[in-house]
Length: 378
Image 1 (cartoon, one colour):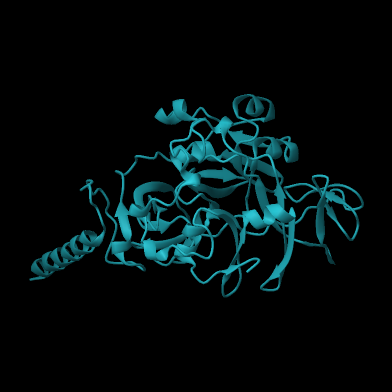
Image 2 (tube, one colour):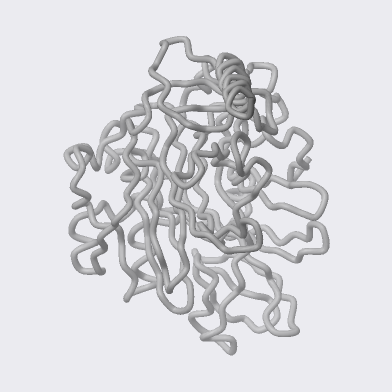
């Protein structure tokens, strides 16, 4: 009797999972190789689309790094990197390499980190891979699922095979549904800018031991940022007209909402001083960083610049900034600051602005997840 009951429960669970999986869009009938509990989900499974087979984009699980001399020799100095610093150590991850991999499972100063980049959304975000599960901290390892939702990468953890939304850091399907990863502040700047600010920093080595090595330096999404979203991967009704779909934006989160800052507006001003949700913030803009979604050869791509966000309070002093002669200067002490928020000259030399958690996206992608966001300047 007990055996029959167990068999019945097993059949019911299998039927539930099969029924749930049938809701995921899979127009190419790509083989399903997941053991994910699809009966648990926080979003409609119909919003998820299988695009390529699992493991098509190999995550960089054992990254190697090189220093400044070799880094400036091997990488185009104006190509963009995700840069972050923890406890005095800094690392950079070229977006061009992440275009081929989208994920790296790494560690910095003992912190398990997850640098991610979704080229279709131009979304670059770093997460903390630690997650409390049933009162115990676990370190998750991630891979690229081959699925998209709203054009954005769906990640998967290897421990439970739950599915995660890259742009929000939330588990949307599986055992860990509704769990959320913590964002680790990072900036997107040029290779040259990274080594100027972090001369002892390290950059991801192009020796990854994958078949992608021969394609680094080229762009598989040629002229994408001059076009429009790939509509087969997103519901057109989610594309707003408040900003051009391919406008690059920086997002800032508050306690009950979000605000986006169009890069075109930041570029006009050079510096944006603002207060949002009681957060005094500043966004710097600097020329000299190219797009990885423009020309086929990254070195020939257009300059789109870099925009970085920080809290503008140092000790008990709230600063306001201007940009003149290509330099960032605070009006309270006349100290000079660089694109990574470091005071490099003046009375505050040696001080650092605290990075404000933010990321870079195309507007259409951000609004698909946060349609009610405020827009700076509107």
